[in-house]
Figure 1 (cartoon, helix red, strand yellow):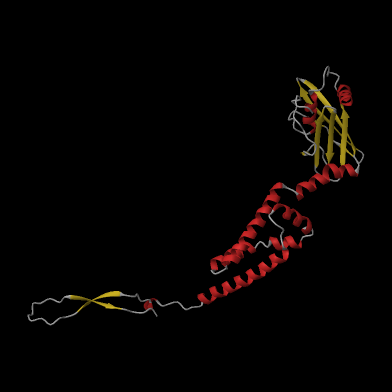
Figure 2 (tube, rainbow, N blue to C red):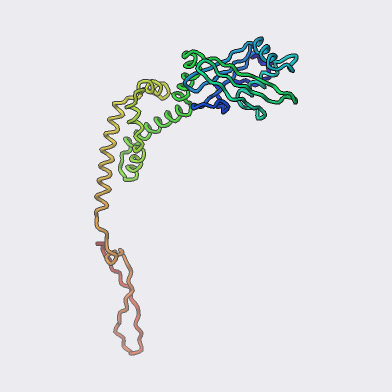
Length: 284
């Protein structure tokens, strides 16, 4: 399709679920429009049916189904495609006939007050075509989704920075130990090394992050960190076993206590004057 063609591009692989094919498995439809013709594909993820029409075959079929159609039928490419993809709200569908050999269903809508009829007649494709058009693209989406790849790279970079920080600074406080416990709780790195695709993922990671990833070195770091965390947890436990000081023993250093002292006075009218006395007490 050249740049002068303003019709929307309905690319192969953009599957849309359609409800007009009543079956125990969900059905999906895909449409590809090109200057050479139009292609309809249907799948239930186990089989594939397709109808491939060049420009001449499409025009002839449309004229056979619609005696009221005259002139250039090229503008009807999109109309038929939207009918097949169940994107035309004015379209009605007859009950579909689905067998292993063929899929048949009639679509009818009103166009400029006149009925426009299209009969889908899709024949079963080969298992190789099912793999190429359905299975392999789905595998690519599952295995190489851009979002999942970015998340994996982000997790690996964060993990490496976290380990380096812990090894450089040491886990000297329960706060850092709790951070490592929280980070280690997901155990995604352990599952990663146990997966059957470890070699492929390892190759991908090595190409995305700086330097190769050494599994043995990483496991050694984990063991060292586990020992360090265990030591930090023991220290925290020892501190928590110290008995608390009773309220009546919580004494304050350099406490100033006012005390009244009766000084010898020559006369009976002399008042008692307060005198400050400093007591230095130690906390028990």
